[in-house]
Amino acid sequence: MADSTNDTPRAKSDAHAVDPKLLEILVCPLTKQTLSYDREAQELISKKARLAYPIRDGIPIMLVEEARELGDE
Image 1 (cartoon, rainbow, N blue to C red):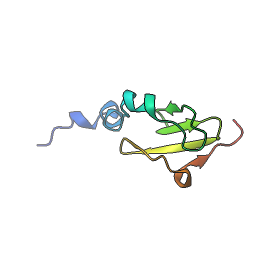
Image 2: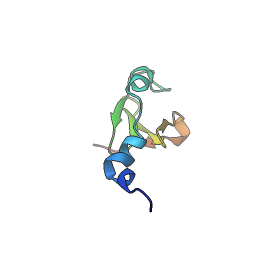
Image 3: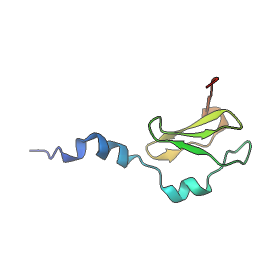
Image 4: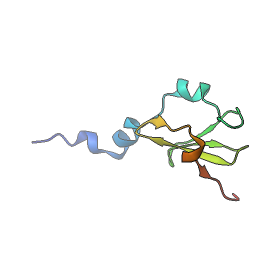
């Protein structure tokens, strides 16, 4: 019988958590400014560039072509 303890929402979100040390050194490729981490959306936000870079399987995708433009928030 399979162990379902790893199927909790916390276990799933922790499995794709980004290393805090990595977040400290990553910057926006356009502006070279620091990024903020949106844990719920799994994105890195560049406020100055108004872009949200996706995080897939715990790996930040730091390509402008992959980023989502931020609306008026």
